[in-house]
Amino acid sequence: MNECVVLPGQIIFREGEPGGEAYVIQSGRVEIFKDSANGPIVLANLEESEMFGEMSLIDEQPRSATARAIGEVELRKITLDDFVDILDSQPEDTFRYLRSLYERIRTMNARLDKPTDHRAKEPPRASARTAVLILPSSPAASQAVPAGGMAPRRFPVRAGRMPNSSEAEELDINDIRLTDSEPFNVSRDHFSVCIKGGRAYLKDRGSYLGTIVNGVTVGGDRTVAETALNLGENEVIVGGQHSPFRFTVVVSHEQSVDDGRP
Image: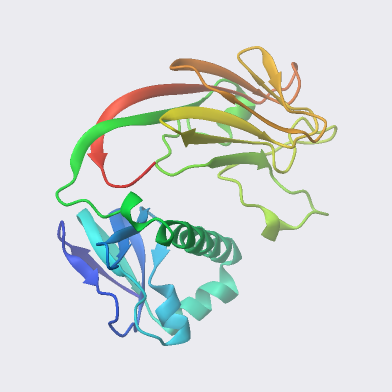
């Protein structure tokens, strides 16, 4: 594996070109877009630790989309031998890469039906963006999220319990992984935070005990439910009232470059 630096706006590869390597983003962001009769369609905006270009690496077909740097980007090039080694020795990374790939495929299928809704914008313009900061409010929560908090750039952000010895590790798709013991407060797939229509929402993903948001229980008894989060601080308790897993979710609006991201 070797590394390279790509300058802002530079094309990394173009749709239709042969693909002999994939890339993992070390820092910065990359826009993936596809040309159409109605103009470019943005398929994804990727960031640190995400892989792209892997489809051409595997099926030996030309690139199906174009990749362009958003700002300066540091990349790690991956050959087919490197990729096979990752599949064999790093199952957690493999699952994360596959999840990212499937999300891009779903996005592409949805956006190709409405190409005018998602055209690539040049130059990018400033717009208001809903920002989320997830802070630990208890010692148990601080084992999963650092004291300075987690400021996700991609949504949804999923939280749930780490699998125990009898549960499948491969099925764990959580971004926030909580270590719990019996009797469990936290379900494997417990809650997520997402952005819809410029607002932040917390969704209980069908947990047993539910999620307490600003004093109100959301979900529980395996029922999927969601609630809008307030601007400012929101108290989140994962599980019942006496659960040790507590977070403060701060929602704000900030100016950012509109790059197609929710």
